[in-house]
Figure 1 (tube, rainbow, N blue to C red):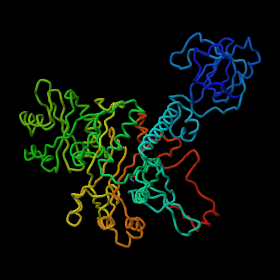
Figure 2 (cartoon, rainbow, N blue to C red):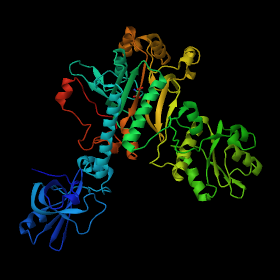
Figure 3 (tube, helix red, strand yellow):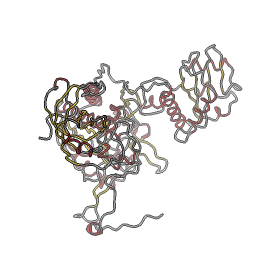
Figure 4 (cartoon, helix red, strand yellow):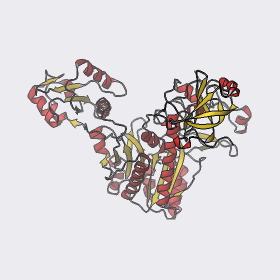
Length: 585
Ligand code: ASP
């Protein structure tokens, strides 16, 4: 028998028992005729002691042990002389009488510790060693538990988990497709699904009125901390529902996860924020509402006072940073540099200090006297001791720069506590988004999203103004999921394709199957999909979704462990009638 207990299991109550443990050698140290070994498995670490004077046979195997050797040991549980309160097994140790080396290990390229000395790429290359570390094991455990809770909750609500194919025809979700050549259908390609969107709609037409799936999706886009080329969605769809039926159902799912995973009771209804308000008050369609610091528009108040920067601006707005009037010149310069970074995109930063003694000091003292600055302060709800930070410029750019500045100030002021959660629904997104480059509309969500009923009439007159019956779940500034009520009428769907610039033939070729299905009794339906990796990393308090994915890709989309993507053999290419050409340098 390899083990009677795990390495995280033994307590004082086991003292006197003979036990067998198996695991990896975490650490060894010798101390005057005694050898101490920490043996580790997924459940914890247990200390072993070898008293060589009493058990000379153990000397040789004990001396030969290296880090990450796999061993099986038998011995008696004894009370530990110096107890370690930080370890769950810290009250006991095992006096060993038998060691078997099950397998040796080379010296691992980095330490298997919570704070390892291995860099990112190295740990990715040896991901199976990185996965031995406690923080990763905890993250995967949390992810597993979330998956179980999602399935429990949705099963209890009558949802069926139904798998949909991975080899499909492209679904337009706004990204590039990964394509797979077909051997049996030469010169033709499958696409890997960006999401199961059209299939889940077809399932509604098929009468499975509550569907979900924890499913891989594939999008060939540039990668960031919260993006991977393959990622997992909790994909859901319901029939015979209106928007609020869906929001209720999935708000309850979110509350269930908060409770079962984080132990947090949320006893209020999630706020619903209009997309337009999110943009004007937070400059962002995924506002972090753990803290206020909303924008205040000053455009009318401050123009035509002789300050050209303001006079030439389309929009002028600011935020009030509480208690920051004491900021030094140096700190203000740093903030100015921050907003000028290309990712933030402002031309400059104007500050107004509302000093504790009621006086004002600003970077625009030449143009605005104390009385005028006081009216800014009043509008921005500032009190003595606060700092006003103002940006001017083209409206969209300025809102987005203010959003970056707001988040930076939130971070500096410690307002973004990882243990605090502020969920909300953002609703009423625009249906269409104008793209200057291609001079046509794109679907902001996807082409199957229904307009709000009250906006339908604008299809022929002012399509850019139509609001979609779409919603996002946002938690702490992270877009956790999004969805919409769908179009279920073939004429309306045709109108939508037309607005998106598809000819009848193009629409027919790409989506004929869906339009056809709409002819056979499509029920009203809608749904949502949540980014499972993102949600898990948010709950785990991690910055990157990589840390909740067992085998992630790096920023260039490579799996450096298995070395993929890679070339394929000539015979494989021949079978597929494919040729590769060298990329131009
Ligand atoms: N398919 C959508 C997405 O992946 C989600 C949805 O509309 O349900 O974003």
